[in-house]
Length: 139
Length: 106
Image 1 (spheres, chains in turn blue, yellow):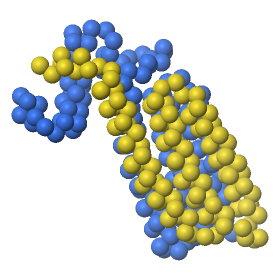
Image 2 (image 1 turned 180 degrees about the vertical axis):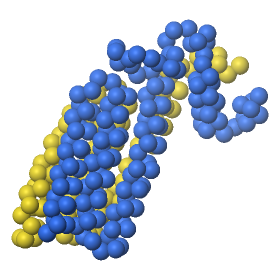
Image 3 (image 1 turned 90 degrees about the vertical axis):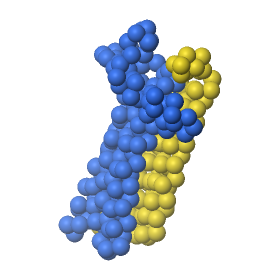
């Protein structure tokens, strides 16, 4: 009885969080802010529903399977979001009008306002994208 | 659905309702998204919602095999997200800032 109530509460909470994630993806103004909603709230909702399944079944192999799925989801969601965000920023998706700071400094005299973070990002990107020419990238 | 837990049954129904509304909203963003990364974000959210839906089906029907479906779907979702992000970035590198890239190289 107690496990049923706990499972029901977790399912309700997970459903609410996934709904909030989808609502944020529709309503928020910018790709990066939308990603904020989709990644965090979506992963939390899915993890709560997986936890509800683990409590509902209660056998050890199913609990292990659900926990492995939760760990995998929480491991891959930041990596995927980082890849999408980098692709979006580099392909020139316009930022929201109310953006306070753009630390990579796109737009205004890019070569003059070149920051250390941009240097680091570009160096990392070049070393991962093109495997050839390791000597030129190291110099 | 077991007849004993009526609270669990109702909460699973309400969870299905929330998930269906969320999938409809994600489709709205997928259709309306102004750029390619918007659609990639919508697809990513859509696959996460499909994983949650599959787990909810596993709870509702007491069949644990749907959890395996959820795990395989999460794996495919990760690979698809990475591939879409690489595709968007490659397309940008080929079309968009080719002159700027070559000027930065030297």
